[in-house]
Amino acid sequence: MAQTERTRSLLTVFTTKKELYLLLITTALYHAPARRSGFDLHEKIKRESGGFVGIAQGHLYPLLHQWEREGFLRSEWERHENPNTKRKRLYSFTDAGVRRYQELKASLLAKTDAYLRFMNTVVQVSEESFLKKEGNEEKVSLQS
Image 1 (cartoon, rainbow, N blue to C red):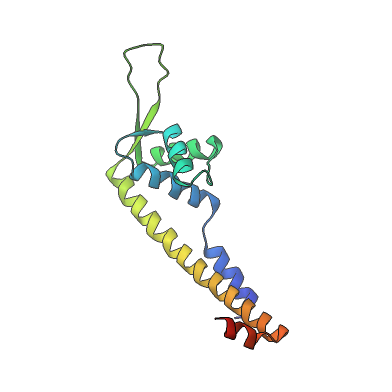
Image 2: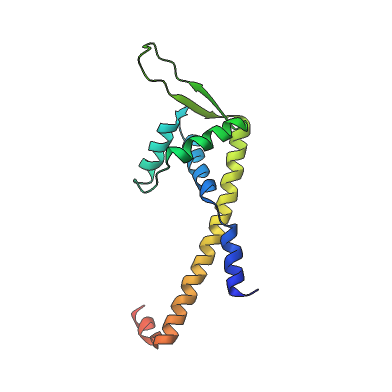
Protein backbone atom coordinates (compact mmCIF):
# COMPACT_ATOMS: atom_id res chain seq x y z
CA MET A 1 0.00 0.00 0.00
CA ALA A 2 1.40 3.39 -0.97
CA GLN A 3 2.12 5.94 1.77
CA THR A 4 -0.70 8.26 0.66
CA GLU A 5 -3.21 5.38 0.62
CA ARG A 6 -2.12 4.35 4.14
CA THR A 7 -2.40 7.93 5.28
CA ARG A 8 -5.89 8.32 3.84
CA SER A 9 -7.13 5.02 5.26
CA LEU A 10 -5.80 5.78 8.74
CA LEU A 11 -7.25 9.26 8.82
CA THR A 12 -10.69 8.00 7.79
CA VAL A 13 -10.55 5.54 10.69
CA PHE A 14 -10.13 8.48 13.05
CA THR A 15 -13.16 10.05 14.58
CA THR A 16 -15.78 12.41 13.25
CA LYS A 17 -16.56 15.69 14.96
CA LYS A 18 -19.91 14.27 16.05
CA GLU A 19 -18.23 11.27 17.72
CA LEU A 20 -15.76 13.53 19.46
CA TYR A 21 -18.53 15.83 20.74
CA LEU A 22 -20.51 12.82 21.90
CA LEU A 23 -17.50 11.50 23.80
CA LEU A 24 -16.92 14.89 25.47
CA ILE A 25 -20.57 15.25 26.44
CA THR A 26 -20.98 11.72 27.76
CA THR A 27 -17.65 11.85 29.63
CA ALA A 28 -18.74 15.06 31.35
CA LEU A 29 -22.05 13.42 32.28
CA TYR A 30 -20.42 10.14 33.34
CA HIS A 31 -18.10 11.91 35.77
CA ALA A 32 -20.77 14.22 37.15
CA PRO A 33 -21.86 13.44 40.71
CA ALA A 34 -25.56 13.71 39.81
CA ARG A 35 -27.97 14.50 37.00
CA ARG A 36 -26.85 17.44 34.87
CA SER A 37 -28.45 19.93 32.52
CA GLY A 38 -27.13 20.50 29.01
CA PHE A 39 -25.84 23.91 30.09
CA ASP A 40 -24.00 22.35 33.06
CA LEU A 41 -22.35 19.83 30.72
CA HIS A 42 -21.37 22.61 28.32
CA GLU A 43 -19.79 24.60 31.17
CA LYS A 44 -18.00 21.55 32.59
CA ILE A 45 -16.42 20.75 29.22
CA LYS A 46 -15.37 24.37 28.78
CA ARG A 47 -13.97 24.59 32.32
CA GLU A 48 -12.16 21.23 32.24
CA SER A 49 -10.53 22.08 28.90
CA GLY A 50 -9.31 25.43 30.19
CA GLY A 51 -11.68 27.18 27.80
CA PHE A 52 -10.11 25.44 24.80
CA VAL A 53 -13.16 23.32 23.91
CA GLY A 54 -16.70 24.56 23.63
CA ILE A 55 -19.69 22.78 22.17
CA ALA A 56 -22.39 24.92 20.60
CA GLN A 57 -25.99 24.30 21.63
CA GLY A 58 -26.67 23.28 18.03
CA HIS A 59 -24.42 20.24 18.60
CA LEU A 60 -25.01 19.60 22.29
CA TYR A 61 -28.78 19.30 22.54
CA PRO A 62 -29.36 17.22 19.38
CA LEU A 63 -26.82 14.66 20.67
CA LEU A 64 -28.45 14.58 24.12
CA HIS A 65 -31.90 14.17 22.53
CA GLN A 66 -30.66 11.44 20.18
CA TRP A 67 -29.15 9.47 23.05
CA GLU A 68 -32.35 9.87 25.02
CA ARG A 69 -34.45 8.60 22.07
CA GLU A 70 -32.10 5.62 21.75
CA GLY A 71 -32.57 4.76 25.44
CA PHE A 72 -29.05 5.63 26.60
CA LEU A 73 -30.11 8.68 28.64
CA ARG A 74 -33.14 9.63 30.67
CA SER A 75 -34.19 13.14 31.50
CA GLU A 76 -36.62 14.92 33.77
CA TRP A 77 -37.50 18.50 34.49
CA GLU A 78 -35.94 20.01 37.58
CA ARG A 79 -38.53 20.84 40.23
CA HIS A 80 -38.73 24.22 41.92
CA GLU A 81 -41.09 25.50 44.56
CA ASN A 82 -40.98 28.96 43.03
CA PRO A 83 -42.93 28.88 39.74
CA ASN A 84 -40.93 31.88 38.43
CA THR A 85 -37.64 29.96 38.55
CA LYS A 86 -36.52 28.73 35.15
CA ARG A 87 -36.51 24.95 35.09
CA LYS A 88 -33.73 22.86 33.59
CA ARG A 89 -33.92 19.48 31.93
CA LEU A 90 -31.62 17.12 33.83
CA TYR A 91 -29.93 14.16 32.12
CA SER A 92 -28.56 10.92 33.51
CA PHE A 93 -27.46 7.59 32.08
CA THR A 94 -29.53 4.46 31.81
CA ASP A 95 -27.73 1.14 32.39
CA ALA A 96 -27.61 0.67 28.60
CA GLY A 97 -26.17 4.19 28.32
CA VAL A 98 -23.31 3.41 30.70
CA ARG A 99 -22.43 0.35 28.61
CA ARG A 100 -22.70 2.34 25.37
CA TYR A 101 -20.53 5.12 26.80
CA GLN A 102 -17.83 2.62 27.76
CA GLU A 103 -17.92 1.09 24.25
CA LEU A 104 -17.72 4.52 22.63
CA LYS A 105 -14.82 5.55 24.84
CA ALA A 106 -12.86 2.37 24.12
CA SER A 107 -13.45 2.69 20.38
CA LEU A 108 -12.45 6.34 20.19
CA LEU A 109 -9.40 5.84 22.40
CA ALA A 110 -8.21 3.06 20.10
CA LYS A 111 -8.71 5.34 17.08
CA THR A 112 -6.91 8.18 18.84
CA ASP A 113 -4.00 5.89 19.72
CA ALA A 114 -3.71 4.79 16.07
CA TYR A 115 -3.83 8.41 14.94
CA LEU A 116 -1.14 9.49 17.41
CA ARG A 117 1.14 6.60 16.35
CA PHE A 118 0.66 7.68 12.76
CA MET A 119 1.43 11.33 13.56
CA ASN A 120 4.55 10.28 15.46
CA THR A 121 5.72 8.39 12.36
CA VAL A 122 5.03 11.42 10.16
CA VAL A 123 7.04 13.69 12.46
CA GLN A 124 9.90 11.19 12.69
CA VAL A 125 10.08 10.73 8.90
CA SER A 126 9.92 14.50 8.39
CA GLU A 127 12.76 15.09 10.85
CA GLU A 128 14.93 12.39 9.27
CA SER A 129 14.24 13.82 5.81
CA PHE A 130 15.14 17.32 7.00
CA LEU A 131 18.39 16.14 8.58
CA LYS A 132 19.50 14.30 5.43
CA LYS A 133 18.50 17.20 3.18
CA GLU A 134 20.26 19.82 5.28
CA GLY A 135 23.29 17.71 6.20
CA ASN A 136 22.56 18.46 9.85
CA GLU A 137 22.88 14.91 11.16
CA GLU A 138 26.06 15.57 13.16
CA LYS A 139 24.92 18.95 14.51
CA VAL A 140 21.75 17.47 15.94
CA SER A 141 23.44 14.42 17.45
CA LEU A 142 26.10 16.61 19.12
CA GLN A 143 23.39 18.75 20.73
CA SER A 144 21.44 15.80 22.11
